[in-house]
Amino acid sequence: MNETKRTFWDERAQLNETAGTNDFMLKNMEKELLLRRVKPGASVLDIGCGNGSTLIALAGQLGCTGLGLDFSESMLDLARAAAEAGLDKILAFRHCGVQNLPQDLGLFDCAITERCLINLDSEAEQHTAFSSIMLHLRPGGRYFMIEGSIDGFHRLNEQRALFGLEPIGPPWHNLLFNEEAVRGWASAECVLEEIDSFASTYYLLSRVVYARLAQDSGEPLRYDSPINTIACKLPAHGDYGPTRLWVWRRA
Ligand SMILES: C[S@@+](CC[C@H](N)C(=O)[O-])C[C@H]1O[C@@H](n2cnc3c(N)ncnc32)[C@H](O)[C@@H]1O
Image (cartoon, rainbow, N blue to C red; front, side, top):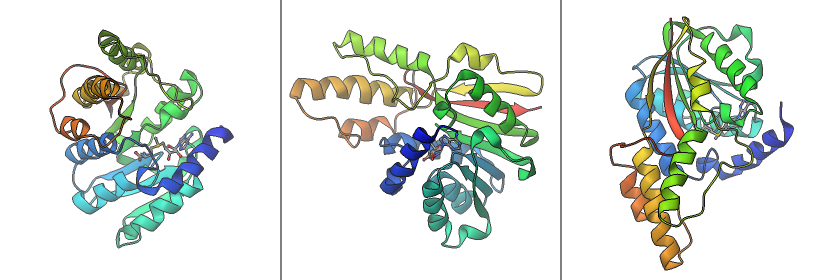
């Protein structure tokens, strides 16, 4: 377990609603995506659940049951407090690192991660964590893996360069996935059904168009800019930016 990263996430828990990311519009897009994809009443395993907001939405709006795991006790405190209002009967939260998922978790209809595996220190650890998550799915169950691609970041930076913008990169605590390597995780048991670049338009408009306009006017960048607010409602076009959904099915 990486203690520096755990301390980082413990400290971010103070931010409460934005504990998992400052880009709250992107987080909202992820949640809406999962609300469309997870079946009502499904049992859900959320690894790196943070403040629990996705599980709480799935339980409150779709009647899902769920178990949230996180290696940060401070994040789990937030999740338990938020679930207290009636959802504590169908949601549970447990302290655990994604590298050491306990055997007794049982099997779930679906698993989700939102930007969790990119916190691991090596591609080998990420692949091992992926394999152990898949083992906690029932046959036919799905893993909605919302994680980050370094290739998507490069494609975004190519667009930024066309507009005279400096390249941007992942934060120090993230190791983004290589898309080709992730395709290699597929096997007879772990079927890669789909890749959804659901945030592509949002990335283009927020990190290229808005970034260039803000640079020209000398304004500081804001996650709640009017352009971001519009961009997150538009359909996805292209394959730009890091965050995307890989849909896996356990055969
Ligand atoms: C980017 S935040 C996302 C949180 C939440 N899924 C969300 O969407 O708001 C990543 C979360 O993963 C947790 N995390 C990071 N590395 C982990 C690990 N090795 N094992 C378990 N949890 C981890 C962090 O504590 C944090 O809550």
